[in-house]
Amino acid sequence: MALPTEGVTAQHLQSSGDLIAKETPGDSISCLAWSPTQDVVAAGCWDRSIYLWEVLQGGSEVVGRAAFSREAPVLSCAFSRDGTHIVTGGCDHKVMVRDVQSQKDMELGSHAAPVRYVSTLADENLVVSGSWDKTLRFWSPQQQQPVNTVQLPDRVFAMDVKPPLIVVALADRQMLTFDLSQGSSSLRTPSSSMFSALKMQTRAVCCFPSRAGYAAGGIEGRCSVKNLQDSSKTFSFKCHQCPSSAGSVNGLDFHPVNTSTLVTAGSDGSFIFWETAQKKCLKRCDASKMSISACRFNASGNLLAYAVSYDWSKGCEGFHDQLPRQLVIHRCK
Image (cartoon, rainbow, N blue to C red; front, side, top):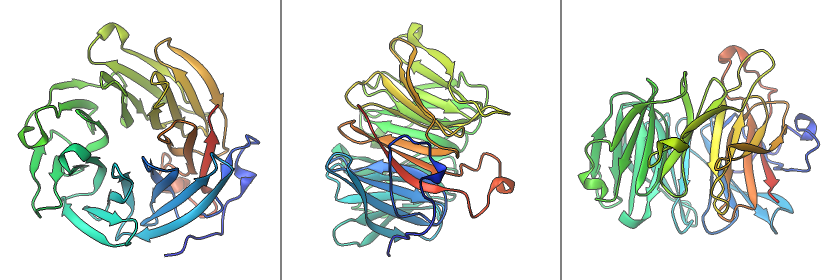
């Protein structure tokens, strides 16, 4: 499958000096994932496709490498630890694995509803998926049935995995954490269960690199930082605002080197760097005239990928074919 080349140009972006991928997906970008071994980024999209780009020479050029399709919109994607496979989940209810080199697909399993999140557990050679069917499931390439299924109180709206910590945000604002230190096969109940400090629906979550807690962003434009070991270090703050309403926080990621640095991206078209240890804003980048639907640091932290595309915050009425949909690379200093 060839990458499309028609569509949005720099006219939708501010003069930030960021690199814009020439190839344009056919619909909004829902998720981003970097390869752990090289500067290759994958984007899952509402046009049922996954696109791969490579960033050359530390950020001099963005080159389209490949694209492949699924049966329905893609909501989540993740690389294996060695970067040779990509796991995807989406509205076809399936958990799929793509061999990047051979371009062959394997179906690991399926849910009874769309798959909201997928991640790999390299130490156990497993994949974990969270779905709107109110389950977490753990999959092995060695068997067709899930290794373990955990029943949840409600649908998975956001999720992140940094073993041994799993954080799951549910539809009713409930936040669950799970501890994988005893292995995924013995997982039955959450290690903690609480309601989010956010007043409205959670849109994105990200575990601390230290695994001591997590950050969560919601549709009211606020972010909460939850420390599971020291409640005195838990706080919330306002970060994204649109002219007439709050701007949804669509993406969160902690820097892999400066581990207390958090980036948030929202429907107001900005991404913002925060120093969570000192509770202050480091830098705000008003990058786009359109919403940013996802963001992610690469493994070394010198590049930030973000997706300029419609985030569906205004429903079907806010969508039209001329809206931008673009992968952009910001070089971090």
